[in-house]
Image 1 (cartoon, one colour):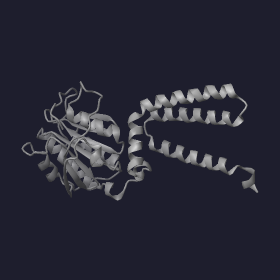
Image 2 (cartoon, rainbow, N blue to C red; image 1 turned 45 degrees about the vertical axis):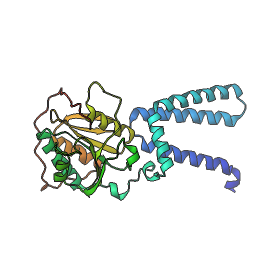
Image 3 (spheres, rainbow, N blue to C red; image 1 turned 120 degrees about the horizontal axis):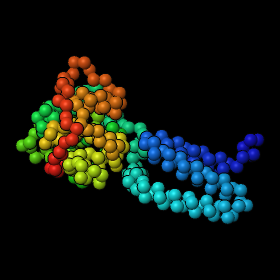
Image 4 (cartoon, rainbow, N blue to C red; image 1 turned 180 degrees about the vertical axis):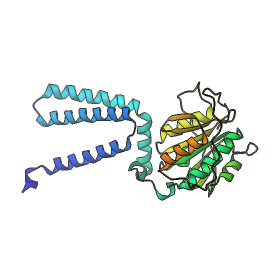
Amino acid sequence: MLWGVFDSRLLLDLLLASGLGILLFSRIKEPRTLWLLRGYVLLVSLAWFIQRLGSLPLTSKLVDALVLACSLSLAILWQGELRRLMELLGTGRLAVLLGNPQKEFRATASTVAQLTEAAGRLSQGRRGALVVVDMGSDLRPEDFLYPGIPIDAQLSSELLLNLFASDTPLHDGAVLIKGNRIIAAGVILPLSRQGISRYGTRHLAALGITERFDRCICVVVSEETGTLSLASQGKLERPITSSRLGSLLTELIGGAIVPPNSKIMPPASKQPSSVTDETKSP
C-alpha cells in the first residue's frame, strides 16, 4: 500500500544520494573541506527541490548556474583529490574508497617500537631517512616517480638502519612499509609544491605523498641536523623528539600500545626551532 504512494524511482534516488553523501562525509577529516562540501550539498539539494516544483523557471536557471559555478570551483580546488578518486575507480581499489584497509596494512605495537627506535638512532647519528607507512592507501608502483627495489622483509630497526647507511645505494630514497613488513626501498616520491623555500627535498617528498594519499604517513630524519619530523595529510610536524614520534605513531597507526620491554631510544635532544634542511634528493 505504502509502496504505491511513493514513487519507487524517487525513493531509490534518495537512498543512493544519501549513501553517496554518507560515504563522502565519512572520508573527509579536514574541517574546511567538510564545510565546503556541506555548502555544496545544500546548494544541490536546493536545486533539486526547485526542479521538482517545476513552476519556477527563472529561479531554477539561476540556481543551476550557481551549482555549475560551484562545481567548477570545487573541481579546481580538489583537482588532486578528484584525480585520486578516478585512479582508485579505474584500478578497482574500492576497499580504499570505503575506508576498509586490508589485513596487510594493520600494524602492531612492534611496528611503532621498531620504527621509533630506528628513527631515534638515525637522528642521533644525523643520517638522513624517509620512511612511508601505508595505513590503507594501497600504494602501488605507479603512485611513485620510481617504485624502488622490492624488499618484502620483516620490519626491524636493524634493517632500517642498514637501508639508510650512507654507503648504500638505497639511502637517498624512501622506504615503504605496510603493516609489519618493509615492501620496498629506494622509492622516489612526488614532491609537494608548498613550502619550497622552507623545506629540503626529503620534507617536500613527505608532504607530496601525504597530500595525495590521506591514509599514509611519513617519518623524516634530516641529514644535516638530525631533526625528526612527521608528515600526515599534507601537514608537517617538526621538530619532534623520538618519544613524541612514538606517541604520534601510536595515535595515527591505530592505538597500538608499545610494549614496556621494547627497546625505544631515549628522547633526542631538543632540536632548535629554526633548522636548515638538506637539499639532497630523497
